[in-house]
Image 1 (tube, rainbow, N blue to C red):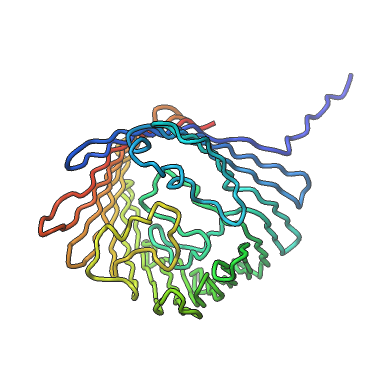
Image 2 (image 1 turned 45 degrees about the horizontal axis):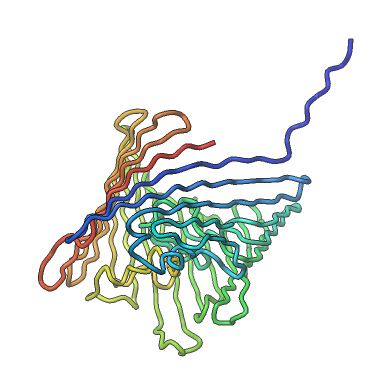
Length: 371
């Protein structure tokens, strides 16, 4: 008998997805229809037991009325780069544009209690779902639902694990401009069945100090985070700012999920509008300007109507003089194990010139095939 040769496991992985997103934007005077084909490739390579390499790229084809009507549309979507320009796009056609961007490309080394990452990576320090004042490196917008992976930073990250559920990490991004450097440290620990984190450092033109926690009260999840921003330079006439968010969520046995959150921004205004949120999906969002409003509130409900059908509703209310509201219904159909259909709505209501109305009504249909 011949001994069977044992096949060695692969030291690499490749997966991703292809999505098609159709958008119908119903305005007061016109309706605009756009389409986005989005392909993502995630490559992981494990050359040794201690060294890993990650490379992820997103390829997108934009087509439709919005591309046609905005001459600088190419600049509008070319966001997400950091120190290195890792994107490529073709010259804008009359109503279409192709763009490819590498948003993950980093080496990861493990050694006993140490971990080092170098390159474009996601540095996720936030603990809440919607607003993350602790997320100094990669703040994201809740409105940008089609980018689940969220942006990355060109950075070096050094972490040392300490005891049970504890760690100390130092992170710095790369920049030639001192006012664009984000350099901070975070200490994590676990006490009384709560995960705590404490951070300090420099975030662009601010010195920062913050903390966060995640735990539970009974069967309900209880999370929070806060960061204080103190401008060390006054070139942009920045004020001191405290941003704090609090979240409570609960899952019922019948699959009903509820989430409630609030955000306080001491530097925000009680008399602003959705115009102040125009930057939210433009890649300019930071932990300092998560919302232009002084107070923001969020409620969400999700329910599994069927093993293959999930639905939900999210509402953001800004208790300002204009009673600004964002309404976000959604439903997901699991057509096959690797094929989903999403129907999503986004409605922005605001008081403009004494008339309270929906200033934007967007309807989305998305098909996603994962491989």
